[in-house]
Length: 117
Image (cartoon, rainbow, N blue to C red; front, side):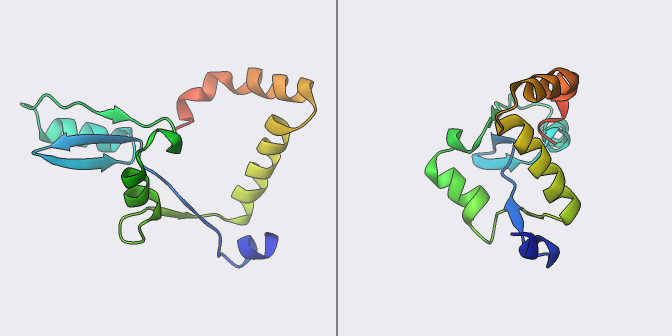
């Protein structure tokens, strides 16, 4: 996999954080800033946002539209630094060293507000 990352050929699909119906059409929103833009643009509407907590919460058609369809998905290129950080964090969180996992969680719990970024 290292060769793919180094060649700039590794991407991940970034699904939206929210969906909302505006004027009879479903709109997908990538982040909190986008959510606020829709609220500000529709001050007289009672908007009901659905918050996705993971891909497993999406209906199959939503998953196809937001993460699989080349015309509508949002791809993020993974670089070498990001891959190394992800590998390190996954090793701590999924590894056998319980104390390292516990320490990581305790040190980073205050930053959980950044999980959706």
